[in-house]
Image (cartoon, rainbow, N blue to C red):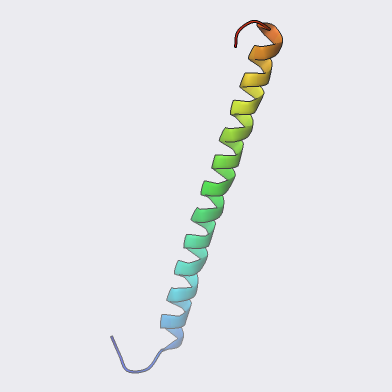
Length: 53
């Protein structure tokens, strides 16, 4: 680790931050999509089999 922060260091931190933020967003989207799919499946099952639950 050097004393000063170079432009390369800043770019590296920035890229890493963007990567982490992207991964978090993807995880959130995947979670929301999975929840939505679960809701759709439950509603569909309820419609097809009213006495299922």
